[in-house]
Length: 216
Image (cartoon, rainbow, N blue to C red; front, top):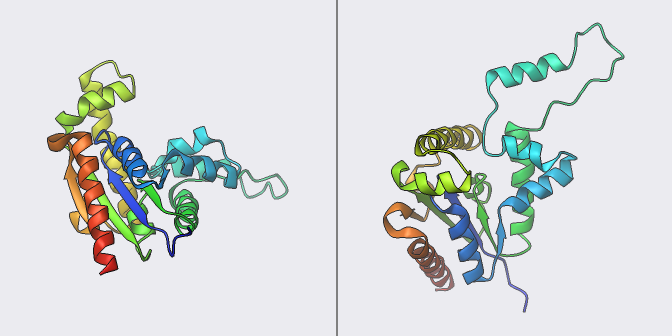
């Protein structure tokens, strides 16, 4: 039976707070498509860029120096007939491509979309549930160290601090909202306190509660 209109669940997350695990488990419980790395693959196909190159810019803003290097790569103005290299897709360009992909898929079928500002991209979706996962850095060190095969806890803490700041800056730059602002979400969960399994259950119950209210 075809749905009248699909549901969209967005999972925003801090690094190491279990976003991928909760998102995948929640999608499986709900029977929805999980959108995560698939977004990068589709963006690479649409832009003719390698997935590896896009991953470098995924959910982060380029620095002043990176943008300066891009502008210098175009070459001096007197070289009028020289081919002008295209700057790498990043920042607003990549966000626009990823947002379009998320919107197109979420209007065809029910999804759980992880990260990439989907809570904002899908803000006008008529059947939307927005979830935010966070945890104290100390609770995320082990997961980040294992996921990235890092040599020490200190390296993991440095990575957490860097990625958290990059994601916050990226989301604020693209949406004008702070990713960590609980007002952006229907449910905020501290996975450092409750763990991934309980977080998944809480998210599932939140989705069902919103759906029940929608039907009343």
